[in-house]
Image (cartoon, rainbow, N blue to C red):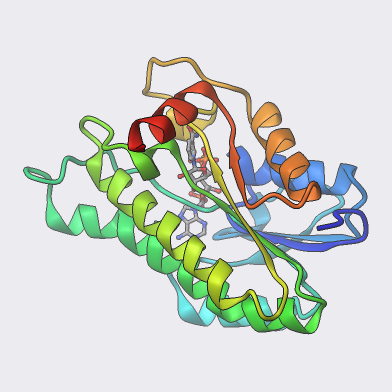
Length: 222
Ligand code: NDP
């Protein structure tokens, strides 16, 4: 995917990795970046176009898609981590992780896939995790949701092959954002992670594994 002149829509663009994606896409010459957030007033990247979008709210997704008909690059970034074990944790809390990280990104992708097709095929980047491949101690609900998101992203690649959409999954252990604040492990910076992902996107890759932790989690699968 050629990032220069792309029109991107980023979910969860008001902080953390979403804000960094928004900044770097604009730095790389994207024509327009719709920086979507539950509260669009919290978007602080000046050259971006703020839009309201809650990935768990179908009406909000439809409104955002109508306001952004020219999108050819979707960044599925919004996510939560409730830090819940699956055997003893509250079921409704586990469902929250799945609702946002699985059904949320599924609904956004379903809504935007036709626009990508109309606009030349384009690309989808989904922020996954080392946890897609590994049950994080104390936080298996998140691992369940990211494993499902990984499989969904692989299904998008198959189902959108005909319209020529590049579908990239980005895996990483820990990145220094609000989400990782309570975890005392080595972290890479948001800047480094997003640079690695966008370099992979520009090179036509379908998978980026951005740090050693995620590389080890992947190797343990085989
Ligand atoms: P942050 O907690 O810093 O940011 C999460 C973002 O997601 C916020 O913008 C938040 O918006 C948004 N969000 C949450 N729920 C919704 C929703 N229902 N609709 C729209 N936006 C929503 O986390 P990160 O930036 O670190 O996380 C970004 C992605 O990276 C996530 O998918 C996460 O799982 C993944 N990831 C992060 C890692 C890390 O170590 N940080 C490691 C591996 C993957 P609001 O401000 O409204 O809450």
